[in-house]
Image (cartoon, rainbow, N blue to C red; front, side, top):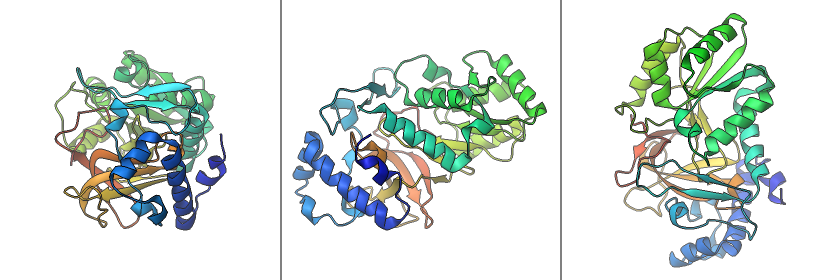
Length: 327
């Protein structure tokens, strides 16, 4: 990793985060031609930027049409979004995969502790059947790093998955099950599962396989089906190298090197106050090799303690595998 590693993963104060964000903004303005053109088009002078709140956010749609890179290196891996049939996928040209690994490994430890304490199970059929999924890449790494022989992916072997969950529950082994929404619903509709000590982590997305339902109803059905008190969630996307996590009720928190802002729906250059619904802007400092400042097509609300909710998507945006649920 380059000079930014120590800076971005040690942003333990607002001041340090702001300094790192400003430094990366100037770097990307100089090294990313598309981002520079975007900033210039807005008639914004980089020298006038004093706070991360003032940094221009690149619309996420550019990842569909351009190679978003802030260096001249060849991509070590290209992640792509699933999209829907006929839609243009987003592509993230990752020139240093070790940054992604460092980011998601440290984020997991930040929220859940040592990965070696867990049996990591994954029910991600729609993602396993295609190449280029950043989610599959992450979970595959977590499975390996758990060093637990019971960890693994389950495609259509749901009977084996349920048997494994019950086995781990009996052994009092900590379990974290990552699953797309429709697959988790299919599982609890077909089987009786009682695993009150497991972490059930839904990663979003009905993918047209089931009728869309509100998050509260989804989580109620999954809580009943798995016998757990709450359903946890992961919020990430192809265009990012960091994830936010929700422990309950769809309230997400970010690791220290990631920050959420909310923009005015009618004035996308204006950042609005807390507890108001608007478009979600994301600062992902780990994204310094592409673009760290992204205006997503998700709608959300930021709370006073910096936690946030995802409330849906802009009507005109493509439906994707992440964040499809609405309140």
